[in-house]
Image 1: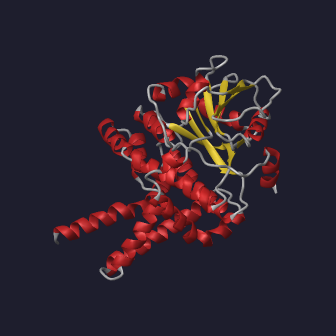
Image 2: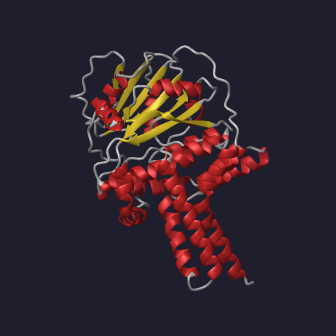
Image 3: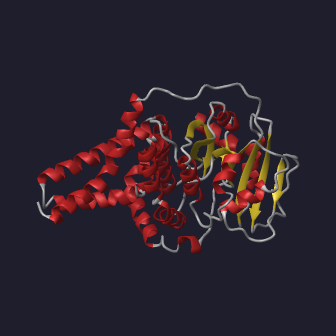
Length: 397
């Protein structure tokens, strides 16, 4: 066997294992016994709910109204309206504090710490909500259950607020896949849930310890934060009952801008995976080792495209390799449908799957524009407006 052949085999392994890794972790999770810390009774912890907005405040009233309807009493809502016109934002409830930075921050973490530095009281925990999110009435109650078991960081679930277009449905399908494997299953297997940018909560002390000394610009603060938390060998819990409803992309322009920032973020921060794998090996930490493997995985469409290329090449080179790649795709497809079936997926999402090739085409365009993504846009533009009552009623139907 020549050096080139060995390199080719190794390259295929590095690409192909991404097809089967999620299902392998799922099987591992089935063997894991529950080792959650014992829950203890606690009075309502004091939460700071931080909503960040950049240029656009259209959705803030709906987001705030959903938060004011929480089945919880001990919290304050901080709206950081960065580069926003707040003249039309009026709330009669004293729990809502509007903060308008004098200078443009253009950064999630700068907005978060602007809120922290203007807290009206010393909160125990903080949770981060996007301006387009709507919170389920039991959101804080469900987060509390995880904190009461001893966890310091918790990721909830972001369900679709809108499924009105094919792009929104495909976006939701992707989120369901990641929430299932990178959230529920990864945590159940003994590692940490990945952070999703919103619908997540931390003790104030941990958040400050991890990020206060950094000035993070562009997308990806959640990637830095999760690496800092797991780097301390702290597990990030996952709960599928702490629900925020998140707007899914509705058109190609919105999709390309958003994904180009996300792809840019992966290329900037996937290196953290090597660090965590090294720590996991040296310290014997399964949490760090497995989480590091997940951070090294490319975005879904990238490793799928690379896998298709490998399969087509092997159609002319090796029958054995072709069979292995076909088996790998079968495992991936089965794993994808497993995630959908285990997640009570809307039938519109299933119906949209036939349009995956078109969706991937726009992802490729996003890849081509990824390099300068953070310079072109800071935040995703949102278009869908709804209320929490409408969404919950729709889910019940």
